[in-house]
Image 1 (cartoon, each protein chain N blue to C red):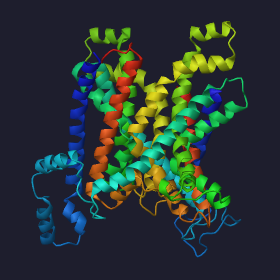
Image 2 (cartoon, rainbow over the protein chains, first blue to last red):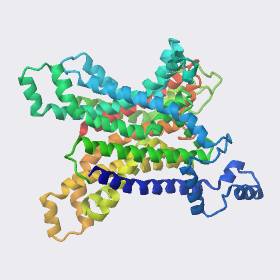
Image 3 (cartoon, each protein chain N blue to C red):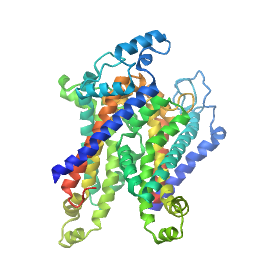
Image 4 (cartoon, rainbow over the protein chains, first blue to last red):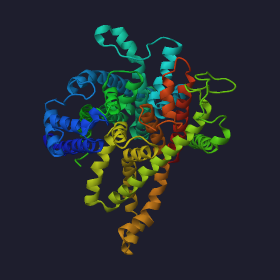
Length: 313
Length: 258
């Protein structure tokens, strides 16, 4: 049963990846013009462009180029960056851990905070406005505004934390963490708002159920009702949302990494966009497609595993 | 509680709209006029100080409301223009049309919108009309999903059956009977779509792919102000606050009208 389900979903996921990467490849190649003219600039002679095109194989039919590119990509060979001349795969290998750490910490912190803070019994009137306020900040304030406000407060004014940059683990744990505090807070503020929205809606639903009334009738404290009875029944969509957010981690990290000058995937992508760096753009685009499709697959399967009521669609 | 939130949201939106419409009357300076008094902090002459070219920040923030509302409303409208027909037809016709539309909608909703917008923008080039279209292209799937869901619910009503029996064509039924019943929910969602469009366009501007200068644009102002955060923090914080304020207004309005 489970195996058949996985097979069926894969049957859908694989063509999706092909169609999307092809769409990406053809639109980037046809609309942006030949990669050679991009590398050499607009003033290059037609002859020089033709030579370079022939050298890299850009003069072949588009379909052949796509198949070739995809074949190499399967072996983690994405060619070389136009701007740095470095292999794209090694640039990604260096950037991916930075983004992974940022995204995993932010998403975990946001999910934990959203579930705990919103679960606190409504009787505690002092906390509620603060939580609602924090939700609104996460929803209404763009990431870069939060980041810049944090930099202004903690770096420029108080001088507690370094404003930008990133330091690897190997150069000392405390410096590493000090550089990471504000980016993680910034990115998790956004997720906190989004997760809270989902969780609060789910929580309202849970509180209408009979088991809550039963628990209260048995004399359980409001805290116990909130954390033992309501939380487990409302938390699933937050987990799903967190999983889907992991699939989009590059999208989430683009702005935060730019604000804090972190050498991650998001900034690599923005740099590639700014420099019309075609191989890097394609490689990251493909990873984004993969991330989204795979995380959707996993959350979908997990959901069905946890809740057998949902039948195959 | 909910009605209070809606009122606050409406007040904010009206205030920003008033700034946009009355910009030439209330802005103390021409937003494009540069002077030698660059990078000044707040003063009696320049309430929010001046930027690196000596332009008055308050005037630029006021004029920025025009750009922001234009892009936000324009993009939401484009997403409605694409998303509503797709959702209506998929929901009403069902069958093959629905089976084709739903996976496409789900997939594009799952894609990171900002990454998609960056890729499309670099292809078509950054400009105000392009930005509106790009954001509309990125946001239409969520409109389509909402409209489809609503259409599915309305389709089961008795008056639709009556319209079918009366011999109405699919197009006529959708236009005359389904759409008027779906439109109310879509209108509420419209404010939320505007708030999302404003955030995304501001993020694109901050990354350098938004509206090109010299148009006063909040995202670009934050971007250039960020370079001078140690000298004149108001230069980035004021337009940043303007973005957050406007988004909050549309969000409160949209989320409480439902």
